[in-house]
Amino acid sequence: MLALIGTVPDNNFPLVAGNVTLENKKICISGKKVSVNRGTPTLLAATIKAAESLGEQMPFAFLIGDIGRGDGSKKLFQYLIEHLRDTLFHTITFRYVQPMVDWQFRILEVVREISPIPVLIADASAMYMAKMAGQSANFELFTPDIGELAFIADEMAPHPFYTRGFILHEENRT
Amino acid sequence: MKLTLDKDSLTIVNISGGGCPEVPYLAEEMIGKNLKNAPSPHDIGHTLFGYALHLAHEEAKRVCLH
Image (tube, rainbow over all chains, first blue to last red; front, side, top):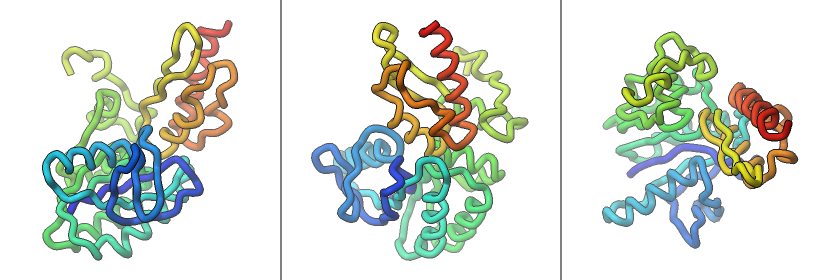
């Protein structure tokens, strides 16, 4: 089963974990509904449509509300440490979560205890977190656009804010 | 961080870049609103991504409103 991990920009959205469906253009999970506008819900919607076309199982998601303070992400990380082993996932995708390096290490420790070790995919902030933690080699796939690539490929940049941006200067040759 | 406007109406039509949960939140709060009265990322943001969008927002106001 494929697992997707991320946040929605609503502080009142609780921590939910379960199979995801798409009904009337809304993501449905554990009795909750989320509009498909941007961020993690768009990835969920695209994954559901792809699964439908390919005849694959619907994805499993771990979601929580977080508007950038990181409080929701911390609760989600703690839940993952306690429950990620409960279900057998062949692939785990991390999307919008607050980049916190120490939690990244703890999550990866849990993943390494799972057998077989799931394929890890880093999307959005999860790519930043993997790079900042020096843990990129644990991930099979990154999904950067050119702006994200500018940070990920800049070995001197500790944070996207300090990217030198040399890739962006040669957009046609990237 | 990038802020995209409709040139005629000055409506904010997209916010992109960055990568933490703050980015979808800022997008939800600002997209569809006019540059003149959209909330400032400086006031509602929490991280360096919010600060970077604040710089883009200030520049957009300087270019389009002055």
